[in-house]
Amino acid sequence: DSGVTQTPKHLITATGQRVTLRCSPRSGDLSVYWYQQSLDQGLQFLIQYYNGEERAKGNILERFSAQQFPDLHSELNLSSLELGDSALYFCASSVGLGADTQYFGPGTRLTVL
Amino acid sequence: GESVGLHLPTLSVQEGDNSIINCAYSNSASDYFIWYKQESGKGPQFIIDIRSNMDKRQGQRVTVLLNKTVKHLSLQIAATQPGDSAVYFCAENMNYGGSQGNLIFGKGTKLSVKP
Image (cartoon, rainbow over the protein chains, first blue to last red):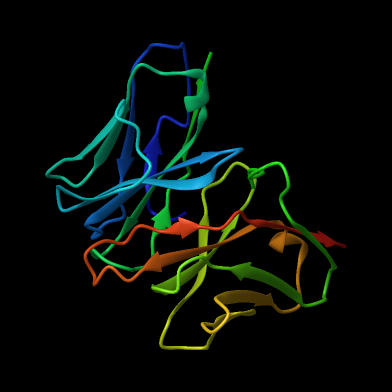
């Protein structure tokens, strides 16, 4: 158990819908990262938050957004969902802002029908 | 772990043998590297990391070697066990001067251990 929790574990929804994925980092970690894992793209970095502020953006679509709350939990919002958004979404956390060990949660499997 | 891509490299070893998993990283500016293990239905699990000021780092049954000249990383697992069967990913972090920590992942290698 990495100490990072994610809910829900599975999510099935229809195209055009909006969903929210939730992540709680390890105790004491200030950085939260979101990654997408799909069959054809592998593990791809989406976005990083540190202590409530956005710090880095990767291959995140405009239909996706995220935030980190004062209690340091984070939410990833996916809207106008398309079939291609079906993937595993992982949250990771680390203590600091820069290069540091990232611990991953169990992931949320999103299926868009 | 989840199959990543249609052509995931596979390494098959006998239980008790040593395993070597290789990774070519992409950016000469990267200064931090991590190996992760991903079992089926689970998130990536941290194995070992190394910074660019080192060539070698050892953990429990694992060793990571870094060759910056050819941008190559390897993970050695001693006395491989059936529980080591998983997909292994290398990941790199470019030197952003400590301002961000996002990782760039390799495609992964599937390790299969025969009892």
